[in-house]
Image (cartoon, rainbow, N blue to C red; front, side, top):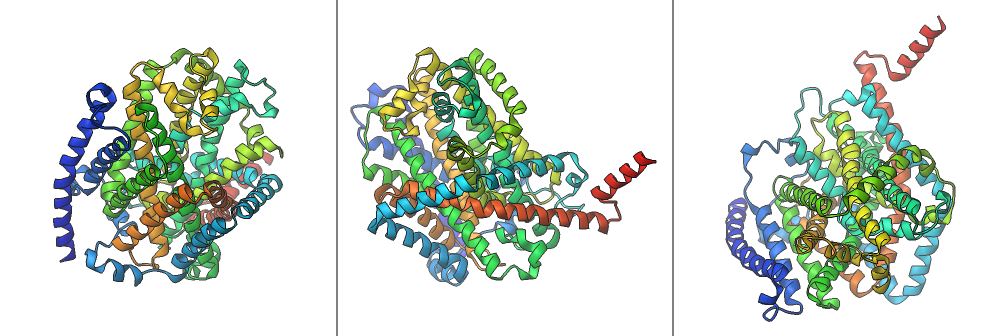
Length: 611
């Protein structure tokens, strides 16, 4: 009965969403490309409302379309691992409360409430305490982040070229649940969020103005431009994505090979046993994963909201206070909650595909109309330096610059690894280990690096030529990176089309991460072996929005972001433990099949050489 009611409600929703999307889209597109026509009719926050209606109703309509089984995507594994139990709205509360794990549900909620209460009562002390912990961790334990990340990259390379890469997750007869393009699209868009849009035009400029001291180049010089692109590529390249693999692949192996639960704590299966994953240590891991995910994604929603509002202000000269920011967050919550509730088979998969297509279209347009010669020449030099200096950049000794940039980035990627890694694990049934590594590290890093070389290179070309002083625009805006992309795009041919696509990318990128994080947190907070309900999806989606709204109204966004990033320390250690456990499992896998292990092969090779 509840399924039938849900189907009827979805049909009614689709019939209402489509005309709203069409009408609001006509006004928004007309306002973008022919502002004089509707400028006198729509003004102020009306533009924000219309933009949200257009993007939101379009994405929601896409998410609610029924599943077409003929498209080749979606086997039995993904719905089982990432399924949502759809219940009628009358049973939301009862079904939700009856299925929550009291520890993994209660502790993160209490911690988040306590954080904001403390920040509201004693903001200065809270900020000072968080900064003190950050400085201690990043300055005194920088070797931990640098060392573990470097080992993760080496492990990924070993899996690509070694015999373990041929292991098929789920057994030799397992089939992938999704086509490869869909698989890549969901992994890339969920793991990158809107950070690639936020930092794409900005990070290289910061390194250009203040290059790392170890590079030995003068600020704002031609060599500084190469160094800037090199470090931007380094921070978003293979190292970063290897953090996700270090957590996700062990979860995938023990989930699909040994029927372990789809939990972040499953990485401890080699040491605790599958039956021992319900103890306090496993619960602690899952609690940290939920806090890191909610804190990280919610602050990203808040900061991306600032970027979107900056774009609306740049296009139509509209300024927004707290009301506009909260309106944007509320719109995002509605979009990603609908997408998460519709499930992987519908909203998450489809919006990821739209995201990747829009990402590729925008990059192609930017390449065609941008300073191609500078981008190609400087980008090639940056890639060469990236390859030759990779080891030295990865193992940079303690320094303030490395702590503020490289170590911060590594901790940030490790803090996102639980939810991105768990999602990677759920999607990887039927894939060979080598394919998982290639997709999640090589292909995803290549897309990220190309974006930074293209957008960052364009920003640097304009900054160096004086065509656009982007650094001055950032300084005039109070130092916020949110404004960096808009003056660059405005100086290009097809500027209005590029600005429109850029704003769309901001929304779609954050939705593809927020819907995934909402689903993942709902799974972690629900009792093991039980699918989360619609009520659980709605609760965690709204909670992420409330945290983002609190960041915008109460403040503490930087502190909450730092607190979430600090969880990267425990997850860096956990990823090292996970890789040790995975190695033991791989060795056991080879022995069970009567094959000589890698160590035995090396020993045999050495004996042959001696003879």
